[in-house]
Length: 368
Image (cartoon, rainbow, N blue to C red):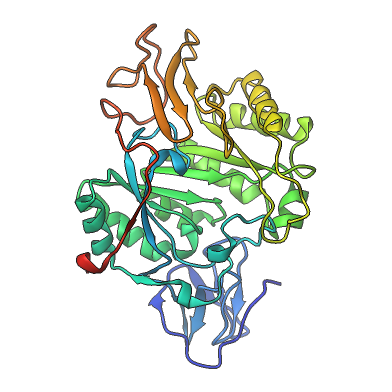
């Protein structure tokens, strides 16, 4: 059964969607495959969706752990408006229990004093527009659990001509999945491993719902998406698992979905696991390319070759990257190779942005 916490006081929050009453008097949350069944005053495992009286409420609506402008490549998205700035924010909590979480201070937080800033959806959009951002990212913790807030913010962003990005583990049920991604222009989905054993033991979750999300994004939406796979030594780094995963991606999602192989560093409950050797990421990239994936990248390490984009037609360098800095650009305004004319999959809008690797904190007080 999912872990829950009991509040003695009445829980306050924004009315949530996707739940139903059970015959035994409990309310079941139907947002994600955990299906937490709650008595009044109890919170779901994510800790931010709770039962208050006869409804589920979102306790973090309008509250954030902070707002920063990042390069879009940091999400990571390498084929979505390259070089542009993106306003990024998250809330608190998570619906997975990953022992290797690299953002555990936010995703595992049960102290709402970490939510230092308040911002309406309209204020978020105004702040992003004023800062010259092209898009807004729901990130740092999984936006699935603050679905209502993310969707309202996405609507406000679209009204001002801004794009929206979800950085998510994709652990969501079918009906909310349809609503959520209808409002997203791009996503990075964290495919944490490629076995049920990995998801069960390290995340207290299941693999299949994540695969369902990926297939849905490819077949049923116009949302551009890329995949991140955090490689953990001794857990999901075998040739067999990497081969099976990338073969599945190529077969079910096609060769044009970019895959980012990211380096693990010891954190949260896995301090005894060593960091990922750069050679492991290079090996994963090689396996992916052998399986037909055209855009495979290394991440969290300094590897200009593994971080750059190459043409699938002629093999030439299309986008050079050094960390988050663009160093070369050989695409036409509509995303074709300047040498051979082959299309580079992605969302491109003329010349690249010039934001580079900068990071800037945004205070929301002026946009309330």
